[in-house]
Amino acid sequence: MNETHCFPSPQVQLSISLVTYHPDEPMLRDTLASLRVAFAHAQAIGVIGRAWLVLVDNGDDAGLDELVRASGWEDFSIVSGHGNVGFGRGHNLALELGTGDLHLILNPDVYLQPDALSAASLFMAEKPECVLLSPAILGVENGWHFLCKRYPSMFDLVLRGFFPHLGRRFFARRLARYEMLESSGQTVLWDPPIVSGCFMLMRASVLREVRGFDPDYFLYFEDFDLSLRAALHGRIAAVSDVRIAHFGGGAGRKGWKHVRMFCRSGMQFFNRHGWRIV
Image 1 (cartoon, rainbow, N blue to C red):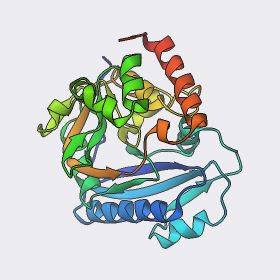
Image 2: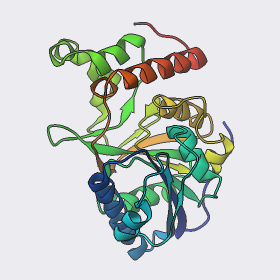
Image 3: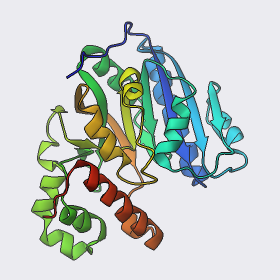
Image 4: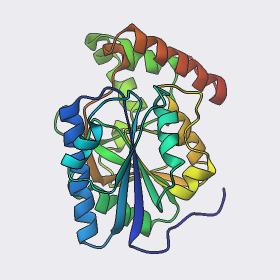
């Protein structure tokens, strides 16, 4: 394992990247507003000195600058005109503009609790061995659980993504193990194999060292791949005090185009990291 990476001061500099493609504007507005509130809280208690946002517009949508500004953000930039290059490549474009001490990879369909950035930044300051932090998410039954997964098999992915509800209920114990639900009562879960790309707070030095996302993934599994590569440079932690709500996910519910992309990316992932059928 390489030496740990740590920022030198409690007043960290935070860069944030968010990739959109024809977004749901009310949802994006809520995401940005909750992010702004969370930053204001962290700034007020002296945890974060500066935070700036890079919104990467893969869809060349008009009016996003006004939307970002109306959400309370002044320190931001928008990258557009490059076409739909995919999720990972979009975030990599933001990284080319420079990063802070910490970098937050965020989805446009996430709502942050007001103290989410404060809790996350304090944890990273206190635990220099942590290179990637994942939050807790509000579940369907109003409980909190981690956004973590064990290394998948093909059957796990098909079961979770495409089986009807009744079929998933039959394999509920298997899915619970894959999603590491037994760990949800913990304050901190160390070293989960895979965490979700909807909210990844990373030490920017490590993110630069691994060269961001693998650009060969257009959509899906790029977060699986980044989790495995980040773990070679330090420890991953899922922290229950960092809380979000996430309104996306579910390739099987988005039509056959997304199913094809999911399958293609899954094959790329298994080819690179090792196949598990069952």
